[in-house]
Image 1: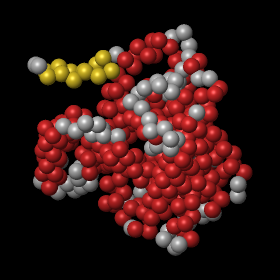
Image 2: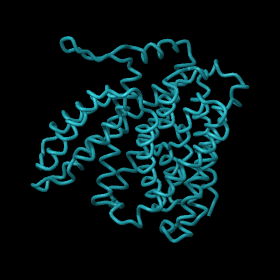
Image 3: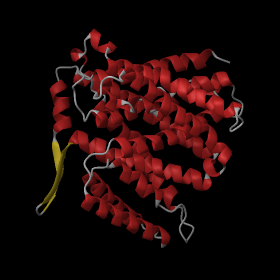
Image 4: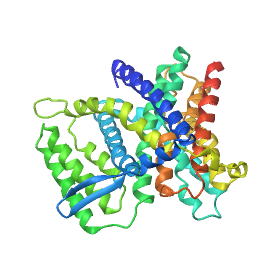
Length: 384
């Protein structure tokens, strides 16, 4: 990732992160105000399309969580492919540190959650909730620190986030898949073949990829596998350069950035952050699901990311980011405990948008993300 491109990406992420924060605060205020029912009515409005005898209707919350987030994962897939083909991930040495850190950031939080809730099979469905990281918020905090943190650590955080998101996609595909449909799988396979042919033929028309991508999303949605997977699969077939040297992937990625940062992610935060605080009692904060999520994100995430990164560096599998020291690296690792939007997303999959815990699971995500952000900021503010 070139320096100028990274700076542009960073400024967009920071502004998007601030908008995410505002959307979260607005959702919390609205949900806990006299207008709270209007908030719930908005999330439950049935929306959809009907063609002849075929129809697809879902509440607006599920359109956001199944549809718009698929576009977000599509953007993640584009970024991943670009980095492997012509960016930071072209060389193995640049991959090792963020990859190892991402693995640690998944394994350790999951183990902590499972250790706390090993005797409750239903709660254990949420083991992956504390494995996620919301990069936008973490980058906002790094931006607040200005020149105190070397740019190499910011690149490390973004690279880590890419592998973290890939891990989330694999977890969703393997562990949060419903009853499978053979017909839908066949249609999805045909769409993938079509995308492959478009790629091999050097097609330059975005609309063809969009149409097949939409059909793939619909078939995956009906297959029992979570529809967000369609986004990253479609992205992997977008050519970086066509036969006429047209940078199709970068053109599509550039066009999506505004929508992702300023529409899709803030809307997702608004739809999922509305925790009814009146239903939360003090004893609930010490329930297995709440403690598991909080400790997994706030403690497990930073220890897992730093521990695996430290091990990779000491074993000479990777190098410490340029101009950075281990204290600064640890500070950035603290910020990975900001799970927020991605943790909300996995929570909704694990417990199927249920309020069985009286939203204390969502509150624990908010609390752990806040603790990670505040602690990480002050740690990096004073560490040298």
